[in-house]
Every structure is written in structure tokens, then in C-alpha cells.
Length: 455
Image 1 (cartoon, rainbow, N blue to C red):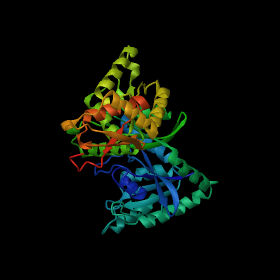
Image 2 (image 1 turned 90 degrees about the vertical axis):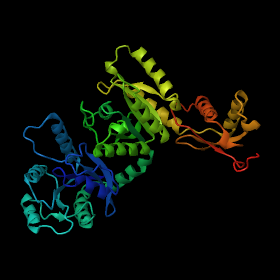
Image 3 (image 1 turned 120 degrees about the vertical axis):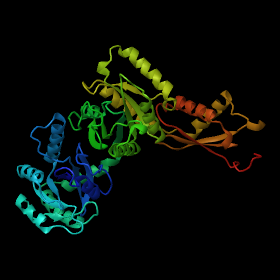
């Protein structure tokens, strides 16, 4: 069992910066504005040789008249703290304690969990009297750290390790279980859920998980971070990335939204299968096509989920129209599966799970060299390559050099003169013959005669 440490505190004290520092990469979004973090995020870190799971949480603040959204954020943070074995309370060492810090500390004292106290932003000269005030919280002396500059990280890790070791001694077989978890990581299917704002991505993932793990709302832009969640989905071990809605680049002016979209792009590169969530009422808008094209360019396998299907009346006719539009607008993903789903009532989730599995298998598919060259001869016979300047381009030999996505090399003459249209003809033939539906295909041309214009 991996022990969990939740980083908590009021907004804008540097929790996400510290989280990124400890996990060793920029995993959480960071901005000077308070309230950037909304959903809680988990990440792995090592403390003196021991694996721990860190949890970055939203800022806790007491609101006497909270709206539904702020209340949902607080409930999500409280849920994250309930999962933790150790709570790491952060406050701003330059500003000292304020009423919000005291409210957070008062809440933590009632949790019956060990608490470590750290004063962040303590680089350079600081007012010692402000740090002495921290004793009144009842958690002992505050550790002095600077998450941005990396100061005090050794002392913090040492203090955290002491508590973690005490907790670990009560967890039977914890080392064995940790080893099992790390071994199974390579077998986990990685999925990114992407789409336009307000298409229902977070709601869909919550329905898959069977719990309200992610914040949802009718207002676009609720999700900011690309949150990674490990779960069991029917018969598959999966890690699902929820991403922020992606708008057209020209409409994005806010720095935070740019960071959110960049975070989503990283999730696509991390994924093996990308689920593009469409609003079934307004599907295949220009931005939907751009997002799917992006996933294809990154070489990911793509499945489309037409969400909000519960609002569609003539489902058979509407599905036929969607499939025709998919074929027309995304020919480079011809054959990609489109599954009607409803995040509201769970309709279609089992079929979506099966489509993801099939897409992943095609993405990993391999074809023998003998099969490829027999197929290539048939394609050349049916449609011979062109003859620029009177010399026929000769396609001599073909082999698959990689999968994930399927990638092929063709040895040929005059490789630079083979038209794009003929390459598209070969890709479509590969997709049809070897069942690479909805999977990006890469074809590279190689020729020893490229530098010789007379061959």
C-alpha cells in the first residue's frame, strides 16, 4: 500500500508549486491567481527511497454563503484529505498567518490525522516573529521552505519520511504491495478524454468511475488541470486523463486557459487511445475536427464518443448522419468507431469500453513482410505508380518497422516524386486490407537513388 500525503492550505500559498517540486515535474498548473487548482491531483514521489503518493488540493477557505460550485470544490478537497495518511499544511511565510490559515488549521485538528506544518516562500530575509506565530496552530515548529527555489526540501523530506516510516510500520506487507503496483504500471491502458468545452468529458469519466471524482458544471471551463485517474474499467486496467476543453486558438487570450490546453496536449502525447467527446446535438464542429486531427498527428488511436445521446429523438437516423460526417470530415481516420453515449444515465459505456479495446489492438497491430509485399503487388497491378518525366516510379519492397501507430517503409525509386494522392491510396488500402480502422498510418519512402536524378 502506497502511503498518501495531501498538501493543504488556503489559496495561493504555493501548494501546486510544492507538489510539482516534489514529484519532479510540472504536473499541476501554477499561476499567481488564487483558486487555479480545483480537482485534486495525485502524483508519485520518492522520500529517501520510499514511494509516496502526493495529493495536490484546492485552497480551503471558509465561506459563510458558498455557491454550489465553491461548495463542490471544498467537498472535493475534503474527500482528498480523507484519503490521505499525512496532511502537509502550507502557509505563506512572508505574510504570516491570517484568518483563513487559522480556519484551515482548525479544520485539520478535527481530522485525527498527523499534520506537518511548513512555511513556504521563505527565500531571503523573513520576519522571524511571523514564523513564531505558527506555534499557536498546535502543530509544532514550521519548516522553512521555498517551493519555487527548492530551498528546505531536504528538511521537509526528512520530516515527512519520519512520519511516513511510522505509518508504514503499521501497514502489513506494504513493500510487497508497492512492488506489485509498480510492476503493473506498464500494463495499464492509457486513455485521454478530449473535446470542446462543455461536451461532458468530466461527467463521462465520473460515470465510468461510478463516483463524482471530478468537478462538473454547466459552465464551460470547469476543468483546468489534466487529471490522471487509475481505475478498473470493466475488464481493463486503465489510467484516464480528463482534460480541459479546447477552444480555437484565436479565441484563447487568458494565460491560464493556454496552460490548461497545453496540459491537455501533454495528456494526448501520453495516451495510447484518445476518446474525442462530441456533443451529439452539435457534433463535428470545426474544433472537433481540429482536436481529432491533432490526436492523429500525434499518432494516437482515436475513438469518438457522441455524448448527450439521451437528448436525441431519432437515434438511428442521427447515428447514420454522424458516421457519414465522420467519413467526410476526417478521411485520415477512416473507420474510426463512433459510439453513442450518455454521461447522464450511463448509456453506451460498455460499448465504448469495447471500442477502446479494439482500437488499442489495431494500434498495436503488425503485418508480416510477406503479406505486405503480396498486397503491394496487387495495389500496383490495380493502380500502377505514376511515371513523372516518362520514368515509372518503382515500388520495390515494403516492410513494417514499428507499431503504436503502425509504421511502414517502402523502398522505391524517385521517392521525392511519388504524389501525395498515391500515398493516400496506399494508406487507405492498408487500412481496408489489414483492418487498421481509425488508426493513424505512417508510410516512409526510402531510396538509394534520391541523390541521383538519372535513376
